[in-house]
Image (tube, rainbow, N blue to C red; front, side, top):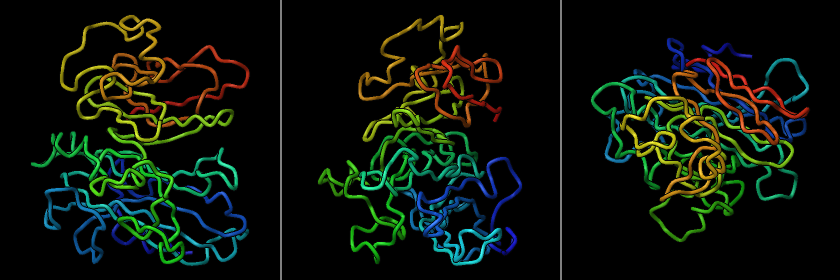
Length: 324
């Protein structure tokens, strides 16, 4: 098996969000040997060209690449990898730092063979640093809140090449699922691979194994960390909203559970105005970053100083929170 430097000669390893960032195995890995990775690469000397560059920018503006790769192991039972790989998607990063790269590739573990979601691959939702990634192109809200871009969107794709499926090609070498809401809306200006949008950095996704609810942990910027229930087609507000607040507007002092005691709108993920709001939040007095975890069943967690905790039922799993 090649070393990481041999496999990814242009990969970035010099900052927190860099290098080998995320991976997942196909639900039929034991049979087909397929698994998927996401990593970041530098531009300097890189012969590859992005499949997507954010609207209004050119190849000369690209600073890094976000790359999703499919690996095919010839012997899935072997202890070392031997096989081939195929690049699915390469997204151009525009801001100065590799801030908020694509952080996750995930299959819905509750989807069963024959269900519409089975074998479809989700990506994390990211503004790719257009909030605070540094350089002249950061602090750029015009790059979010739109459906003709991959910025701020969780994607759902069929990782099979359109040369195999004979169906609609995505921006990269993958197929757009016909079941996707924005693929079936009849609007040529919306990207069909978008599942939901309006996220700053949903670094990790998870599903409640009991009822299939999809969760995203969205890392905040100035004030608020969010746990969202992810619904297809919904807008989660970034960069207009951070938690329940207008982005950039100072919030009142005090803990959020005092400001919003058992608020039905906040704790149900309901839509207010055009946005869907979090089901759980904490401010930066209580925790610095909600960057990963697992779904509680039947419990709403409350953020504490460095971890999320809840009085949970016997089947509730832990929800680790790390500072980021």
